[in-house]
Image (cartoon, rainbow, N blue to C red; front, side, top):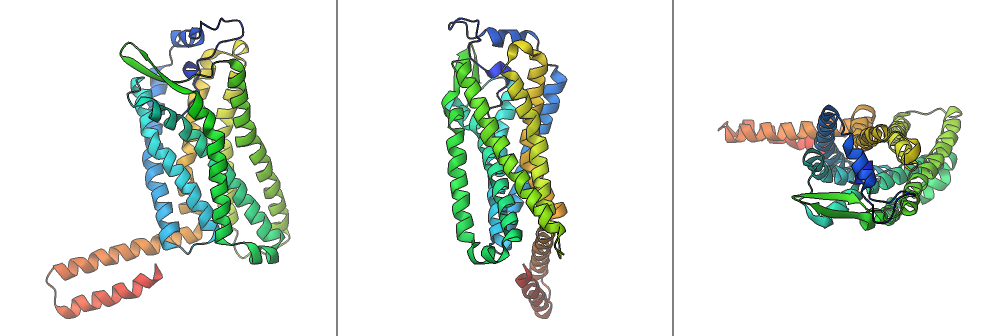
Length: 345
């Protein structure tokens, strides 16, 4: 995960020589962060990883195995896979936060540095697809009915993943490792402030500004159309709105401090360091919020989850009765109950 903390940057400032690449790092380390903040951020990241892995696994299982494959479930499965992959990589970064030592090698350094931004791009692009899909469904219902297919949705998701991977390439290129005595660092070596500025602005414009403007436009059209229609249920649109709002609030602090970081001479380095760490943790939190929203807001998801869990419990109870030596008729009745419930899942 490329946190882009100031202490990880390895570029020369405008008034520095090319050989003095550690000046900024030295200045930052001279005013170390309170350990309390580090402990809090470590604890929060551990919670994000555990809850995110469990929650997104549940979403993938429910939407992929228990619900009918539709365009909407295709979007949400892809979003859950993106969040799951990030949460699976996060423990490596938590270890680095605790020890300040990277023993996992260059390949994993590059991989973890790219995970956050791959998640950022794929998440926001999926939110754009969801917003456009909902907007087209309301604005052009006949056309959507004839052309909106799971196969086309899968193709759009595949293109989204390819575009996200392409935009994540700078993280793979500039992330490096170096050894200081017994300690190995995993850092971002832009080798020039112009490259640093180009990468940051590209991430902000392509990964936040343009997608968010598209989402706002689609949401405005959708809101206008819904006000003129009598909808049987607005639950799907509440889920979409909640996903968009959480993405916005999770990522705005990160992008704000990253943009401020471009002008180090005018900013407080300690404030920037603290802001980037907190902002990155908030951005990571976006990966476990989606499953919570599905459970508490999504009606279809809640009903399917409840039916699936009920089926599992009935199956376990039936197994207990069968292995407990009860008579054949009692076991047979439990099998009938189980067979009646199973089709509901």
